[in-house]
Length: 163
Image (cartoon, rainbow, N blue to C red; front, side):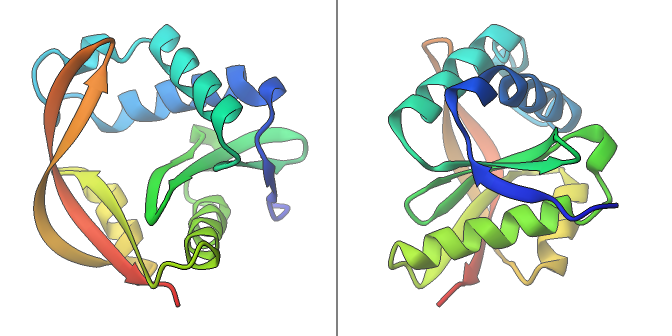
């Protein structure tokens, strides 16, 4: 596999990022999040979220492999807020390259420690982050908004020293 190419997301990426985000979220979260949240995570909701994030900030980075969108990250301050990889690219180097870029961005913004949250029960993600040197700091209730409704998702907080 060719190494992924990273670049800032543009408006032209919004639809592909939203589709990948929707797919990845629904692969990992059903049955692990509060009742009602899964139904509110529609493709249109992801479209709105991604379009706003790309327009408002330069904190969304995409990974491409042979011209195809392979994954993306969204960084917010000291948080690696979203790390998603498309199904065909899971188990490759894409996730590690994206996570390393999130760590780089967080360090470049002046933060010593990065954090992220993983929904409790998402063992695949937790194992991946542990292999990348992230430390499990324990349970955290993470506030989530979806289509105007507010939820609290049971998560694990992970941290990593980045500077």
